[in-house]
Length: 286
Length: 276
Image (cartoon, rainbow over all chains, first blue to last red):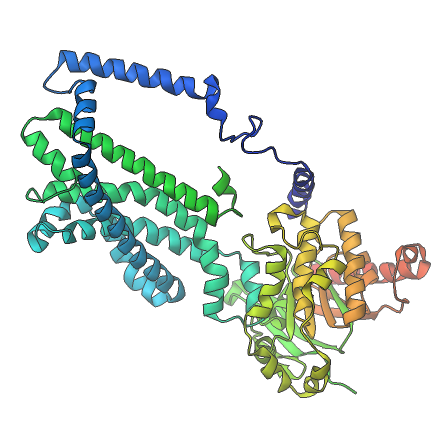
């Protein structure tokens, strides 16, 4: 049954290897780095942005209490750049450290449940319940318990990031092909050796897929926690809640814009790290 | 006389129980002398793969015993006496070819000591040293591919890498489960040649599962014919053809006589199983 498919796979891979790959800086490369100079590449997006900006301005003129004009948003961004950046750093710190804590916990538990079926039965139901619980609803309670400092923000962010990493890592650890495991079981490789040499590298693509999901989630977690703690000393969530209570719409949207840029930068970093770590994996070149 | 490399005594294996039980192996006796190339052949369901998996320590026999160099299968695995080449190459996509074929030497490092404690093998140990994996890759025609990733290789080259990985262990018993079944005809024949070349030099014991009659005759010293329902051995045929066996041999009548003999045995077994 596999005969036919294997045969068809054999041919293309050999011929492809023989073809020299065009440079990344050549326009012929499908993912050329300077492809952006071609109007066909950037024009659709530019037109779309212009249309959206026009709609926004029209809306801002018609409903001044709902939308601030774009130049006002730009103005406050430029004038108070230091203010936005320092608050962005606070939110970024909460997001990244919270994610790191969530990642460490999820990874360790994923290893535990992939090695011990007993641990799997004990932990998975709780993890699933945790996942379906709207975690943002816990934020006010955590603020009551832990005050206005960074701790409740880190806990919320870690909790939000926990489940996607746990599930993906657990699946990746278990999805080593049977025949690979058999080769190494026949030479009596220990469970630790199988974990380090087979399971964890096999899980890496799954882990990176999870990271792509949880980096944006980590910012959501940090902002929601800041919004819930109305007395917080800093962070873009605090900026938004303070400014909206004073009806400073331009400041609110400027802060949202900074959050969006932060999200894009984090996603870019994950993609970069993925390309380096998963050069052998087809998803890394997509 | 040296002890046998593989010894199976009235091995039985049943999957499931009650009315749905399937007897995969029934009362199988098989003795393989060291250095022999032995093929298992038979229709699907005859238990040839199950037999291989029992010798590989991947499954336990329900009855009877399986011993490798007079040690239990578990002891043999712990001492790295056994190398396995599965149906697919089963290479790790994140390791280069060289990284793939050297990894088995990096795991279970205590195996060498355990091996010395296994009776008749300790004497041979002085002559054994770590094999030069680059040399083995070169002999398999994979020198240029050593630093490539498996996904950059053709299916035939990947399977060759899997064979090098197994030979690199210098196993006392090499188990191969239809290793060429997923390859096209030309690739298969050249890999058969290369396998025989390597085996000729290293003279390890090979247990080779196949469903191709001509492959079995071409490769083996002994062909074990199996039949299904229940899985059992119906005949053991020694192939008395000179080595090295090259393409000219295909034209010889003796080669075809062996093929006809094995086909005949397979048909007889098939008919008797249908009648039962």
